[in-house]
Image 1 (spheres, rainbow, N blue to C red):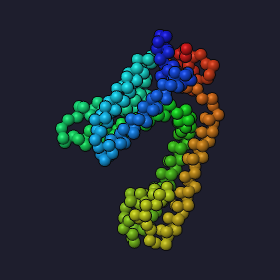
Image 2: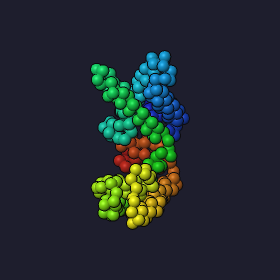
Image 3: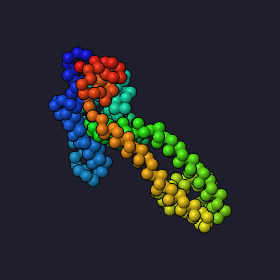
Image 4: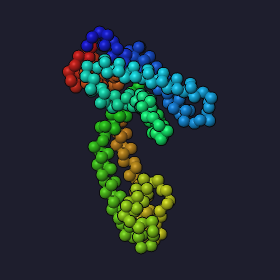
Length: 268
C-alpha cells in the first residue's frame, strides 16, 4: 500500500491515532446533524420558513458522505470487499436516497420520493462503526447465534403446539380462535408477555392454558438474555483494537501484530 493510502487508511478506518479519533468525531457529529435534519424536516410546523436551509444542509451532508464513500473505495485494496460489506451497504444507503429523489419525477411519485428521503435515517447505523462497545455487542451476538437459533426453534415448536391446543379448546366457544393461524398469533402475543387483549380465552381450560403460557413466557424471555450476556462477558475481556486490515477489512488484531491473522496482509 502506498504511503498516502496507508496514512488515509489509518485516519479513516482506524481510531487509535489522534487524526483517526478526530475524523471519527467529525463523522459522528455530521451523522447526528443529518438525522436531526431528517426528523425536523418531516414536521412542516417546525421552521416552516426555512425549507431552503434544509435542502442546503441535506446536500452538504450528502456530498461529504459521498466523498467519504468513494474515498474508502479508493483506499482499500479490494473495493468489492468493502462495497458489499455491512458498513459499505450502510454508507451507500446514507447517500443513495438523496440522488434517487432527483430521478423520480411526477406528482404521483411524491410518496415514493418521501419514502426514499426517510431512508436517510439509516445513517444512524453509521454510528455503530465509531462506537467500540457496539463491536463488542455485535461479536457477542454473532458468537451466540447458533444457541439463539436453537432457542427460537424450540419456541416456534412450543407456540405451534400451544396455539393448536387453544384452537381445539376455544374454537367451539370463541370466535377469536376460529383458525389455527389466529390461535398461533394469540400464542405468540401471550408467550412474549405482550398481551394486546384483542383475543382472550373464555373457557376454564383455556384460561388455565393461558396462565401456563404466561408464566412460561417470563422464564423463556430470560434465556436469550443469559446467552448473550455470557458471550458479552467473554468479548468484553478481550482487548479492543481498532486496527483494520487494508485487504480483507477484518478487525480484532492483536496490538503487537504485524500481519493480518485472517489473510496474512501486512498491517503496516
